[in-house]
Figure (spheres, rainbow, N blue to C red):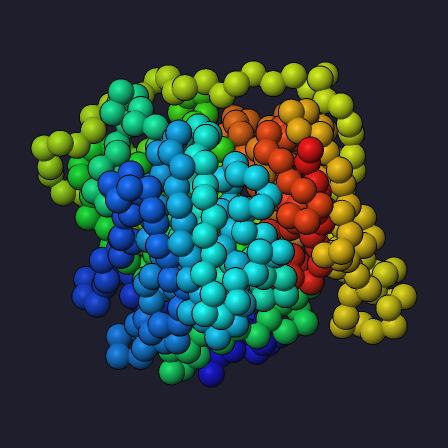
Length: 489
Ligand code: C2O
Ligand code: CU
Ligand code: CU
């Protein structure tokens, strides 16, 4: 049986064998492929802006005939896509039917600290949480997931994640595909390791904590190597990297160009053509792909290059690309025929107006010197930010509502995907260079390989009792304490 522990430490042969099976499942063989599961859509406005979510354990067949114990939101695994209208006030009713506390964090949603769902807002087993969310931000693809300190990684791994679409009704006018489940598809990509009986066993082990837990099997919307039938025209994919730690290097097998139209915080000023796209944990990109040639094509991912040897073993131990899913275009009448040239321009920003400059050093404790100082070869000295481990009783930073600050993020040990709650930022520089065009819009998470300068825009309040978090979105790092908190008033 391949548990995460044996995988993380042993790597090698067993992993490659499992991967081989998973690969056979996709494009090469015509049988035994599952269709891309499309999560239920909850259009909040159509139900009086009241949305119920029930967090519970369930059973889901990743492998036929081998039901796996999972967690989900009103579903065995993952959760419904919540479509929320800009300007609405949405009453959420979240029931925790798990046997342990959880929280539900609205990742990327701009709401005050008291309804953000951070680690302070635990929902006990059997309890119900009722935050009212005032939706006021540009259209974007966001998501929701658990955030209980020390248990975020495991709960997410068990299946707790769902998408949020903030909508303002502008998609038809912009000429963008917007028919949910038809030409506007949620694509939640994750990696998992399964036991021989199909079980998901979360045991990060020491290496998994230091480097983040990685799996050898890629799942999309909870299915292994699924197939999506899409209209033979332009299709919009709302990509979420829902992995605990893995970066995906996405491309189409025929290396066709596709276009990034939005990042975490909403639209870019115009579509950005790419033929490969790195997506880091918690990041979202909306992309448009042209399937009008009617040719089936596999979406695949390359080795996690920024992870060096650890990236290679996570997928196959080789430099190969592994299939993620397959698209099969079918002739259809309503297909979108054109790529829009212009999108709503993100607001201009002025770095000179920043009122503060702060530095955050993200460290997973794998520098040689620290390692030997700890006295153990296998346990890091410290996983934290600026030399400190997360302390729920400590407010690390106080910010002023309505101001901007420049946050300089430095990664030590390995690249860390840095995320801020309750605020959006613009990337001013990445490793001392201007960001590539697809990273130049509003974001809430960015992979920092070396260092980054972010212009953070504080537009929502957070008290000291209900502060906002900032952290590495490698969930094992976050749980180990690579997290801080800030107030905003
Ligand atoms: Cu995706 Cu602190 O969150
Ligand atoms: Cu968040
Ligand atoms: Cu990290």
